[in-house]
Image (cartoon, rainbow, N blue to C red; front, side, top):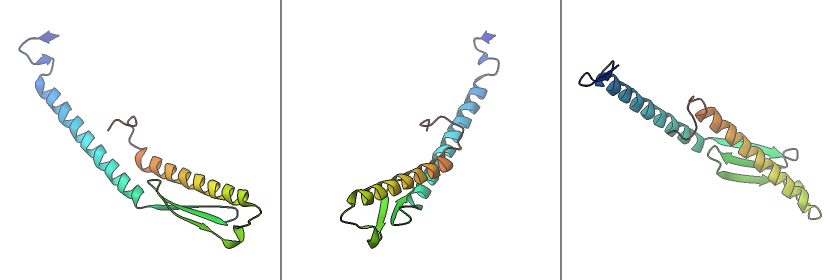
Length: 116
């Protein structure tokens, strides 16, 4: 029951203050965890290949492509489309790997995405 002058519903302002402190600590801890995850993503290189390793794409965990390597024998002037397909496949695979790493590093919070 609410009693004016008694601190509200059965516990007073101390419980609300403690809850607020706990919530602030949780937010701070979560922001620290996310910052560490972002740093790890930015410093982790992932590699994907296509066409029997004829094309290799390197990407950072934050999805910045850092290198594309193409073996000379993959270059056929009469079949540029196949080379384009291999580059596309390797790039998409590299992005999927980066997404999986991000989910692994950030997805274990138990909180809705975008909360912090």
